[in-house]
Length: 348
Ligand SMILES: C[S@@+](CC[C@H](N)C(=O)[O-])C[C@H]1O[C@@H](n2cnc3c(N)ncnc32)[C@H](O)[C@@H]1O
Image (tube, rainbow, N blue to C red; front, side, top):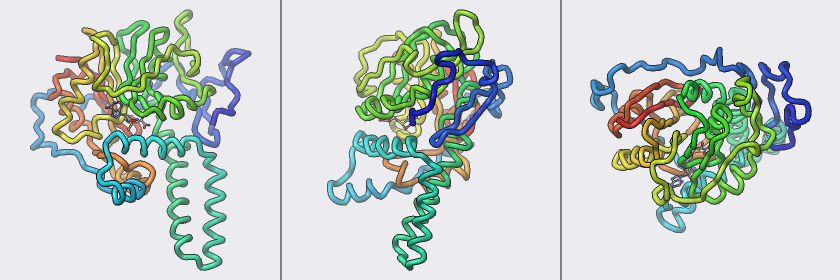
């Protein structure tokens, strides 16, 4: 990752580079629909018209993902129950490894190994190589081909149309910080504060996020589209527990991506409080959570060793919306993107 030449570094991004998409060995670059005019990837928006009419009895509770990573199970056999923070540390190291893979090269290698074990009747190794080939094929499809994890077009569709100028953006549980960088590109010249209590997220997940990855946004001088890179943005990364943040109500946007679903119901209200606590009057909360769908359930089953170190739920947009509504927010927009639900809300 990171060996790509930066588009337009010397020459300025030319129009033929906008509107295109292409694959690198680790991820997709997608510069389609630079003006956002045709961004249509925010589906089924606003299916609930009155959240006060919705009840848990009607919609049921989220689905809990029960399969756990074997590294967590082995650790717990020796040391007892793993703390939530340690679980995140396991998750972040494991997940990061997959973003930096040369996927076609690793797939070729794992298929070659599979055949060689097979020809020597090494059944244990065959089983392991089969699992690895399945995970690599799935990751290739879900992240590299489909771009379902980063999903820049879906995220831009979710983020568009906010009434903010040079916003201060707070990203809770930022990991590599992808979505705050996409927001910054669309609403530039403000400030991003990323918060994650796992130091590795600062040093490696964000630290090694490719400076060549183009985020589509706008040029504030001309209002035309422009590509932004990580190192052109005003970003501060804080390694801190969200519960210890020193801020007042000073942010225009508070963002989280894949946070709420990691807390059982007794903590959901507190998580919604974290989002409200640092928001200026009139500010926006933007949240996404993974969607409850058959292919997501399959994904977390096949990728259990890579992903499942923490408590995790899959929910539909009505369930997510009801948590947000009950947490004291008015929902401005709701819908889904490729693999996540998305909500833009404001405190009631
Ligand atoms: C599931 S990740 C977010 C999804 C992210 N987009 C990714 O690719 O991994 C949630 C992040 O929140 C962080 N986190 C969880 N609880 C936290 C807390 N109390 N304070 C700070 N960070 C926290 C974890 O370390 C983790 O990196």
